[in-house]
Length: 432
Image (cartoon, rainbow, N blue to C red; front, side, top):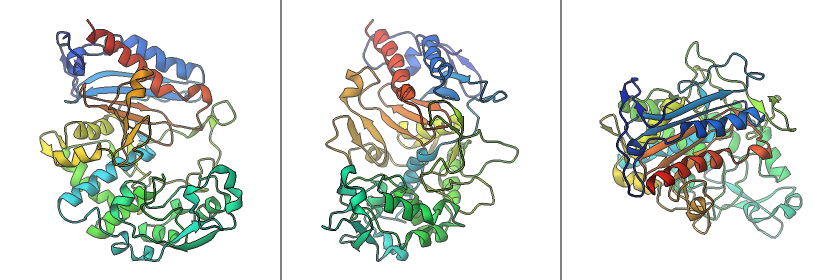
């Protein structure tokens, strides 16, 4: 196990720095005081049957691995060897990657955040908005009115959808899990995850209503997927090509892509629904309806909001680019001001727990009060139990990987528990 010493990605051992006595000491100086206690947190969540496996990794801003640990439920995954190079379905952790690529296009003048989406996707020029009989958009109603919202009634959108609305989840797109039966079933019937390409995906969505007038409020959904398709239409390049040509290639990132490499394999989907871990049933992951994205190299559909694969090693490199305000391995991808805009307040500004940047959650003071981490962390995660955070004060990135749908209640606070143990160690060391 790696403690207060460090390994570079090349495997070279570096000495730990002398402990300093001021607040927010960089991880490269303090290390991880008690890695065994962190191991015990992860081990417990797996041993108690909440997760099929857990892999956690901490890297400082230069890519030195300060901590990593892997624990596997051998009853479910008897032969799995899971480490920092294992391929993981990261789902919504794709979103910040797509947003970063789009912001790179904005820097180059290819796109503007205020561009109308219909300028690139004219199929969306006459979008409708689902409303209740009294004209209230479905995004504004509570669960007690969900059934009464059906059958669907719609009206023309009264605002212009922009690129910024897509980034901020204010455009009006949604997943098939809103809880409103008629709008969920309408999206599920289109089975957009099986679309042949982005044109087919757009065609399947064009006749469905939005859940709100664009720009009204924050409503989480496939907005970032549409954002990726705007980037494709604006450049004439596939999203896969844009990621490779603008991000992963120039920065030397390996382990972040859309297609499964030859001879590689993916871990099975495990469900905890019903209280015990088991292989997921077909169609159980219903975020799009009956099917989920595929990862075949021949596939032409690249979902910017949900479709990426990553290793912990590769995704940590991407996060370190953000931590280093746009640079990695001596190359600049984004300007410092653009990265600052990513973690600046944009939506959910009245939320006492924190706020949203550009689809990047920034923790508030309650995270520190509850001893679940620190105020000011940049946090995100994915549909099958993946989680990341960036600590700009201590200059490191953290990743926790798993593959599970429907986490039972006793496993809900895995990330907070792990971070809590880690930060209590930091606070104790920094108080000396």
